[in-house]
Image (cartoon, rainbow, N blue to C red; front, side, top):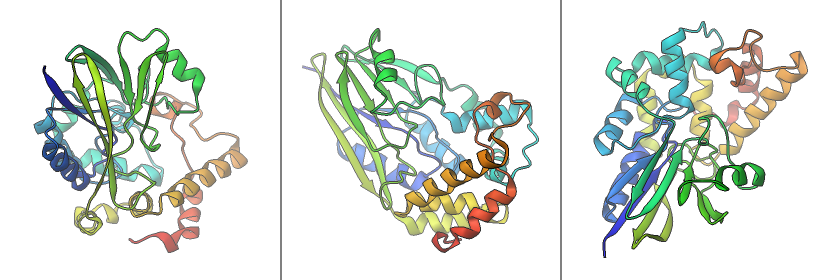
Length: 297
């Protein structure tokens, strides 16, 4: 009987420190294959380092919405004046041309098969890198599983805690967030599936610790803090046990934008601006002042 172990990693967000710890753990658990579900870069400024690890690990890699931002910026050269975009532009300028071209080649979903078990993997949903599939959204989950030509639908994107259940006799699995999970202190999420005899015999939801001080020092050395500190502080909140602060920040920013203008997107919306929540600089900086006691940079 042939057995295979598959590791599923999603939402790395440039956290190469956590990624290395996850790979180490996976290899100690005799994983045979890796699947990576997108959002490889952005949030933490270690894009090239992260992409080199990913490229050396597997060719079964998806793009996420974070890659889509960079692809659209490369294509459209949007005039992104808002402060909140500075980290994206920093990442774009830091990435090698080879790595920019690499992320352009990545699909948003993929079918893979191991020992007779077929997976459909996606970042957000089979239709979009931006669509979110939450466990309580029964209508969407039913929509994507009722006629699914696969044994399992596997995705990430939401940054919800890892979960799985069977819907319409299909495994539905959210692989969690490896790089910036808001629910833990310096802990990466990933999944190992044990497959044999045409069945998934075990689903192991794993939590792996990593060193926050290494990340803190790497952020300082990257130079990104000279460009913009707010989002980097929010990203650090997302990994040091204060993930709720990031949530409150963006919730309030959205509410303030809606109160001010009734919208949070550009009037001439195209591409990223059709779905991206865009915040005025005074709102961005005002909330940064409000939450500054939680910031470390």
